[in-house]
Length: 479
Image 1 (cartoon, rainbow, N blue to C red):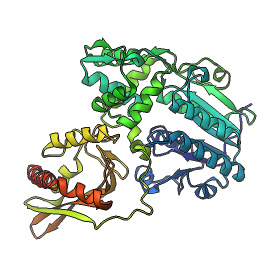
Image 2: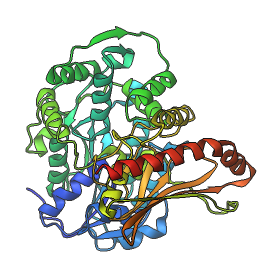
Image 3: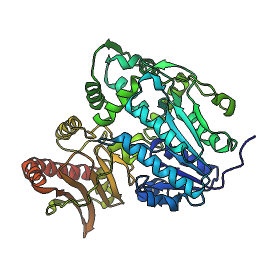
Image 4: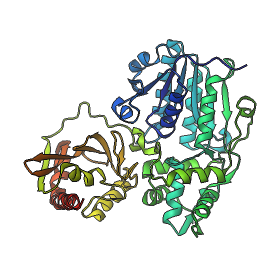
């Protein structure tokens, strides 16, 4: 017997790839829904009709209001991008959320975990995902859906497969490329998450879910190449360390080194279904790899995925904590240029900056800086952008994140590894018959190291920023 419809649902992780798509599905079903977000403005820029409550799973006091009156909560949170101690952070977040859910009288938590067996010497990432489910179930009944990689336009797994196959005619194939997985299409995964809302009250526990096929990562790359009409050759490399694999992924895919290392560690574990209990409770016939890949390609070719893995703030690691840190005087490099065109045409090339368009001047230097950032565990420059023309608050633009955007202003916050905080701002104003483009680089240094960094790279910054503004102005006049 199915459970009655939930009265009030709380969704965590709504800025992420899966959470963002689940939010759309829940809204279509007219379910009373609240979302928990660390930065509500990022979520509201994408879903203006969502009911968003500011909160953080690592701040227990912020959870009580969010969970008040909730009978079912989705827990789609992880700390994979954290610099260190992500297992401890995952466990603490789950502890906080479980306690708050129990206090608020939440009936059920729906949690998305990872496939893999304990006896297989699980990677830290998979071990943490499974431990989170155990922690949550100590407080509230949990429906834990364990899955392998997700195939869909914008997913981390699909972006990795696509980038590797598109960019490498000769594909290096380390040992993990031959490990078995059971990929699931994003549409099937969302259907499992929705149906979990209506399971009987007594139905809780672990449900292993996946697509119809058990394949290797090499099979996925080969299928992608075939559907795209690409001829690719494999070069087996029996011995390659996780660190080298992560750097390799960071060079040719949107995955940066820190996430790449955890991802490669996880890829060494087979992630296939061994328990078919889910078949008795869910009315779903998941599609196979070929169809899932075809649908992902169809959406990918539209050049716009509804959500991307890098949308989540965690895609750049833990949010920086600046409490107690004394910043030096703010350092500013401001430049402006008058042009003979309208403000709309002047802002058009600014709106397209980054991604495939590049940075208008000395793009190779930006890529070099991204490579150096990758080597020290930063995000690098491979994240690109969601859409070639449109921007919204919270979007990633290579190693920047959009903090504010309007018809005449763009503010980007740096997510690269820096001894301080950095922003890049563009403003367009009209005066008389001319239009002024103003470009401002802002840096808050931390101590002497921050000051030394700014002044040591200033000559290069001056060259790059001057050239960038000049080329933006030229592109605007050509509009």
